[in-house]
Image (cartoon, rainbow, N blue to C red; front, side, top):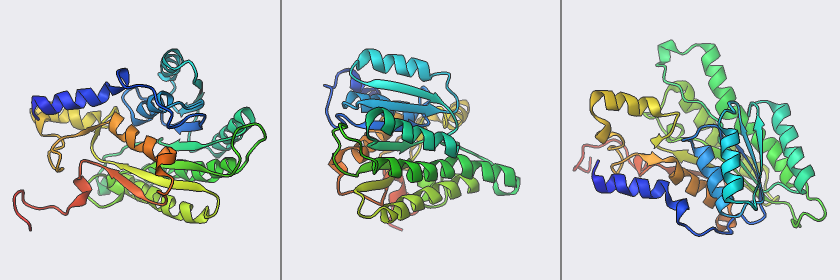
Length: 296
């Protein structure tokens, strides 16, 4: 990977330090799950949501060690944004149902639910047992189902004085290119992410007429805490510069790039985007495997 590419990535990661604050999520009440990792997509999205004028952010993660630091940073940098942190399991129905109700009770509305909680696995087929497969589906898929079910109900519950006059909102789920086709993940992980894509499509149609949009974002290889093992292994082999070279951009992605896509899907700028999976993968999923330089 060239120095110019590395510099470009660093600029993307630090762009909020110089970018003017925006209004793309002005007055929006948002729930985000999977926000605990300091290098993760959830945290990057929370910072971007705050930068774009969100009114109240509810940040949930099963591991809450870093949530206070994220909350403190947002409230210091964006004093107009209220932040509530929750240490809980995103695949627990009572937790998600109560959280959605709480958002409506405290703000009179819910506008955005980013269901980002997830786990990555790496076992090959013969080594995957039932419990592991079930747990992967629970964390990656059931959490998205609960966001869809209870988030959509809250988005249709409009309270007087909230500034929101009709049903509507955006539910975004983190899927993966592994859910689009084989070659990007283990059997259990890929199956769980394919199910998330299906939830986005069926959910959008089940909610027809409510003005609630349901979409899935499909990251490719992104440098986060979850993928650290990939980058660490490449570093040990001396092949770190080759990570991400299979896609047309010839590089890996960073959490901030996924957050930008999520912001688009959360905002009114995507008001006619519904029921789709959006790959954010440098073009990785655009082609079947080919020999570089040949058409077939």
